[in-house]
Image (spheres, rainbow over the protein chains, first blue to last red):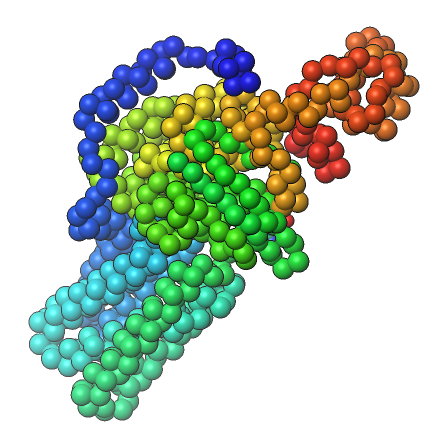
Length: 238
Length: 292
Ligand SMILES: Nc1ncnc2c1ncn2[C@@H]1O[C@H](COP(=O)(O)OP(=O)(O)O)[C@@H](O)[C@H]1O
Ligand SMILES: [Mg+2]
């Protein structure tokens, strides 16, 4: 039957010749198909996935630096704002990758969503750390006030804690807007908590470290749990 | 090369989407034919390993696919039915992105993308954003990303949906060529999409595989079941309520009907069967107008 129909297939001569030419060239210089160097893969991946968000976060940071000297207690408040903003970018990004079709597609490739997710969230947290440090360093050197350094560490608590908690619940909540609401509310709450701790109770700096550790642990557990669910294919947000 | 499916079953609540399916696929174009909701997409997702089955397994070269999934996906190209690709990527960016997540080498994929854009007539659209593409173009981008890693197993879920006749023909030509060296499984509920290119056809109904055979053999079963009747309007109306009428042509006051029937039609002449007849013979009870 196939033969019978072959004669009816419309052949576009020009297009066919072009295709043959190109295919010939391809075969001549066929390279190795797969990338062995993981670094290169991630470099490319960074270009596509994270670059624009990092640039946006960087610009927002510069804006914050500009207004910092004019705000009371600016160091940690702006720090928290900054982390909140980066968290928001991460969030937007997470939802972008959760599209019907795309999600299915990405599960049939080598670097699957659980890899991508870990990669992404870590990029944001590293970026967050670096930009907070830069930001605070600038504020400190301008204001000559070393108290801001404590705020740097405080500002890392909310993203870790919130991301970690979020990752624990995310697979059990079907409604996306609920997730965004929970995320926003938790972020605001933890920012307020940090703010309150610094402003009104004079807690010694050595307490910051354990708090940060706990947040980090929550984050690790959350990530692990989420990835475990993902690999089992039981993501329920479609 | 063999892709084997054994007793594959998937249930969603009370719906049995795929019911103890058994298949053995080899190189060539295999058309998966069935009405909407017959379980085509569900079966394809299980073949791709992205939907866990309730029971049964998929084997590639005698190995259960999930055992060595990383290796399996290197041979796999998949185009899902829903094409919710990143809307703000351009066609070029999207294809590069997919190449990266497929773990391909840059020197390789940059050339491959050129080749595919050319083959799929997408060159002019390389800088267009995904969200601005027409349905047909999006489909072609979907096919292009599936072909990036030169897969040995190509799974296309309704690749021809939304394409115009010209696009259909060029896609058909391309798929037919691909079938020469890989296993190409494509689903559709439109018979004409596959009748010219399929080496084998799987007919699925309500999750069950009714037939898996060459088009020739499937048509043999229909021999003597297709009739042509020339009659007036009144008789035509009667036939249309009593029989499976595949086609009606009107010429002045004369109606020419194409009827599929198990019984002998007295005033009709027996004619050669086509796959359309076969499809209607099996899906008459659930055919909707939109399928044509
Ligand atoms: N995720 C799902 N949850 C519940 N039911 C589903 C799901 N996916 C498919 N189904 C059901 O399984 C059946 C087969 O669906 P599908 O495989 O999409 O059919 P086809 O692709 O042939 O149109 C349908 O009855 C559909 O409603
Ligand atoms: Mg479907």
